[in-house]
Length: 83
Image 1: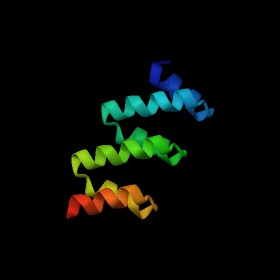
Image 2: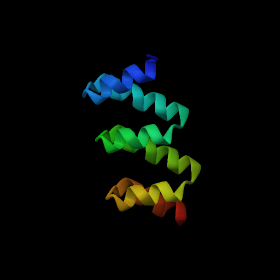
Image 3: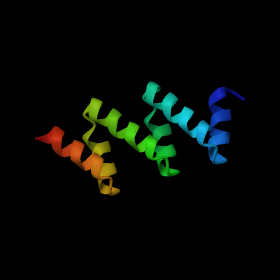
């Protein structure tokens, strides 16, 4: 089992340190799918990193998706980038 698989297993078990490490690794790698998975599981840190990455990439679709889910930070960033 590689490091990420072990972290996912531990994160899926609710271990906060593993979740934090996965968010950090996914953010550094620009792994949007992993960040979405973590965000979907309730990680607000993953959502924050997703917003940051989407803003850097000017990924309006991702920002809109997050805003449509009710994330006001994503909506604010989207509005700022589009102005």
